[in-house]
Amino acid sequence: GDIIVTDNLWKTYEMGDQEVHALRGVNLRIRHNEYVAIMGPSGSGKSTLMNLIGCLDSPSQGKYWLNGHDVSELNDDELARIRNKEIGFVFQTFNLLARATALHNVELPLIYNGTPAAERTQRAKATLESVNLGTRMMHKPNELSGGQRQRVAIARALVNNPSIILADEPTGNLDSKTGDEIMALFDDLHSKGNTIVLVTHEPDIAEYAHRIVTIRDGVIASDHPSTRNRNQ
Ligand code: ADP
Ligand code: ADP
Image (tube, rainbow, N blue to C red; front, top):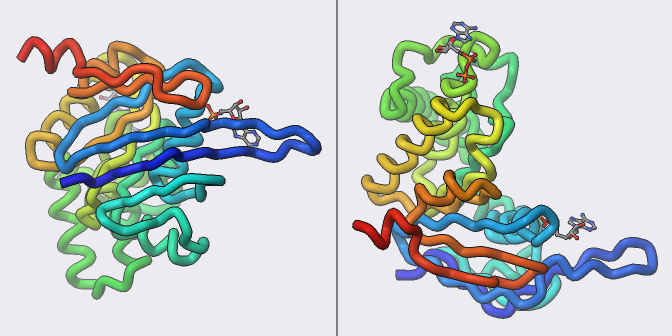
């Protein structure tokens, strides 16, 4: 079934007496277990679309259904609840708590949703093990490499079993070898049934996905299988 459905999504920012139409009628449908890259030049609307898909912001016009919920009309509290349940975020800058161990960072989403302590720790440990960080659980971010930090962030994104993983330039702060390792991990997650939406401006990174959606001036300019997917 469909995890993401948007119908004529618009986002307009008010800048003094000016209006910026960052999205101008986006229609996008993403099915369960798809692996989609969203590409486009700077200023094309990628971040705006990612913020709407991730329930960080609401559209100015149009409809958005996330895993069957109509989320276009929700208030901020309702959006936060849906976001915590449905979305696992991975960012370019990792966004880990510097003073907390890897384990504590991964437990945070479970603390937020009230999971009992024993279950929380057990799930966070199992998730860290699944990204090959079983031996680094008590390390703090500054005791880990960039690639390890991103794997902590991916474990944090996964620990709540979200319906989609939303990754914004996840390799942007990594050297290319480490970036390839992180993309191999996304491949692995995809093959285990996860739905992945990857926002990137790098064509080589987008090629890891199976479908590439290009956005230009706030509208979808193209939507096609990746070369890798066509060749499979
Ligand atoms: P991208 O992520 O592709 O670089 P953005 O979604 O950040 O594109 O931006 C799309 C357009 O919306 C740009 O013209 C940008 O200047 C404008 N924009 C983005 N965020 C805001 C904001 N908070 N206020 C005003 N304009 C914004
Ligand atoms: P990257 O960010 O691309 O992983 P780094 O320069 O951070 O590259 O790390 C390079 C190597 O050094 C990695 O294999 C990592 O395991 C190791 N490393 C980096 N920082 C630390 C640290 N604080 N303690 C132990 N090993 C580290």
